[in-house]
Length: 506
Image (cartoon, rainbow, N blue to C red; front, side, top):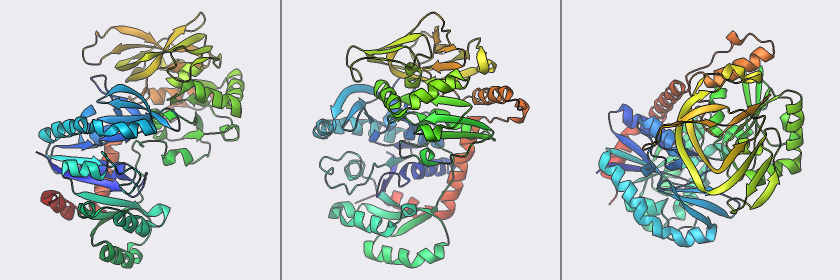
């Protein structure tokens, strides 16, 4: 069975996902077969495996760092919030159903055997398992029947490294307070403390570290610096949403709808010099971009109504009429049509008008489409004509069926390459004039797709398209994982971490 190490945090966004990815990369570099694991993930950023199963993207990112294919075993339970009090519950990659928070809290203990079955399969196949916790282990109202923090550590017999975020302030109180709220047997499982996102001179921090180790009786095994590493974020706590709003030579605005999902689809644009990728939440932030992207969403109808109420829909319609490129992905694509109908109550029920930018109708149904696809863009016209024939690869994950009407042309030709599929080519998406849409997530990841979009915009603006230099996004991510690993080796006591992992827990 594999050796195990677990990263828990004092709060959400303390840096658990990134540290787990870094450890996965380090162990891979050191010659071990390593896999990530998170028993329960709550996020709207999800991924479809080659088997057609759904899992959280954080573990996909960590699997990439480990140099292995993503598997639903790495994330057996995924919660995708549908509103403020409920989530779609996905178990072993398939939809179990929608539950309120109270219903799920009462039910989750039933998932313990499935969690351990997935973990044990991974442990049989690997040398090391890096487990990620969720939120904080000191959420005393959620500790009963816990399956993701100390409950998971006990099931996996995993020593725990507890990480705090110094960038938010109060890191000593975070770490000491969390340890104090643990039960005595849980405290014994915490074998190391990590201070994350540090900026400045560490020698100034040393007296605090000495006091922290003395009071907690737990060693500090690392002070990791604030890292500007371009890897995928887990969920809506991403700092990308609060990033730079300065307009670049080529300006792309992504509408930050309330239930935005899979915003990682647009990360490839960030690696192209001269491009600003801005997430905008209001009409004032929109400005005058070259392209407006409507992203995926867990609730298409309610997010469209939100845009309708705050004026963003009217601003987008005005921009479209003036020739601005409008691009919708998945739920954002559905919004561009004429009608949205939900006869089975998959989302909010009823029917509403779409934005009317593409002649098509969408009807929501209970069956979720989950497929891996590859193909090419069709003979595209309009400002993105340079996309014609460009290769794309990604996945579909949606619960709607869209029917095109006269005037709309299919945007892509794709084949389903999910295991067991017939591999037949089908038409996807639609375009008309300067408005484009597709169901395919990660459609910009492959080399050439994002670059073709940016070069087309540059040409339309009278900018030399040859000045636009894209990158192979997969290769770019590999360099980022190596930088992450090199940084952690420098600032973490890896010899101590290996020893903690070897000794395990009593």
